[in-house]
Length: 89
Image (cartoon, rainbow, N blue to C red; front, side, top):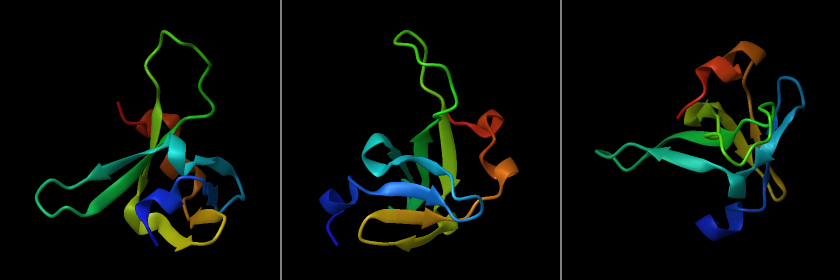
């Protein structure tokens, strides 16, 4: 699978069935030394919409990605793992 094919996939949490966003809206956190993906940074959909505030991100560790399918990426996080207080940026 090419990286460009991942953009349209939804990110869904297996633990609660919650849709966290689209991969195209997300960023990757990459380890500079190894080149491996460390985490997905998904915009926090719970935060208020504003053009002037910095975006809040939810960090999803790469080891939580369980399956990359045709239409979605399945992750497994419990609710306290993706609390907005653990957001990046």
